[in-house]
Length: 502
Image (cartoon, rainbow, N blue to C red; front, side):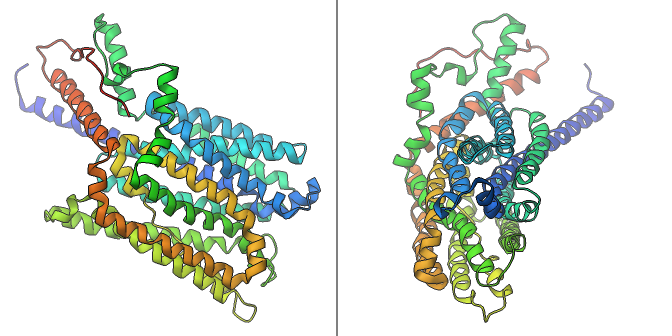
């Protein structure tokens, strides 16, 4: 075809149209990911404002048992991610997220119609297991669609805000709606989940190796060539491979990756304190300030406001990073300098928030003062850092962090009331603040030693090889598509000996 001005213009229009569609698809994936996370975290604390109504209906008098609806949900967060995250790295993100979210919706319905306390607790556990998929997989989802660390970082900032805002809204919903009946708390959760599931079903696959596998399958059919394979198809398969390699990946990352191990420690303490406050806030605002169950949920909004502030801070830092990158500042190429300064800021703010709450929650001090302590109660976590560091393995990395932090989040709230009753509001909060102070050292250690740790990481080395394979495959497809004289089939991939898989 002769090259004419009209052809050039049409080609540019086609490229602009393609880029616009691609951008819209990415925004939709971002939206779906955030919605699924909000559903998951909203569900975790949904019974918080309905505790007294649940106790009355099911005749439960033990304070330890009344913590179980939230704690068992978080126990589900322990077991779900170690299965769902590696499965998403084998079969793709979409099938895992849609199927688990559909089950989450069904079990939310089951909670609303539970006939007794035992069944209610079982359904809460099942809700937690299926809801954990979003927490574990969405980080990998964003790593799939955003190759640029800056754009990916922005997406993760909204992800972190969603994980913080969801649990804060739930006590308000349940506190006011449970006055009618506690069952309506879960009917509302079901309505939100049902609407969200419709959007989730419209999401396309994002995981690169799975997309290439489907292209290879299609091209084998069209070309009649059985020797066309995607890299993921050459990897070992089978039940043994699934159990020993895929499903154990989050556990092995926790045991052998120092970055993952210490990130788990950092987030476990932060997460445990976060969920402990669903027991501590009623003690403070109902016990000291005589709030009712509805208004006692409103102080959690301050933490949500803090989460929004953290997004604003992140975007401001992002603008600094972009200017420095355009100026070719050497520090912008170092992973630790791009992400960890915000985590280093978040740790001390966490400590300030806890001391503030503990020593201002007094009857002679206005209630707004301890409520405002929730604003700096944000942990600009290390999730952005591990997402950038592990990329295609980000789902397994986040599964490891989700599982370990959920253990603490499930167990520590059980000790909340005994601890606050024994030590008092001030010293119980101070004890948590001192633990947080020790935790805040971790981001600073990563800034100093993180590059050396990653250089020796088996997973990071495998990541570099996978990225190289994927980029080469994409380049081959683009060169074939742009060459009119060649047959429109992919390059053939020979079945060479596979390297050791991590």
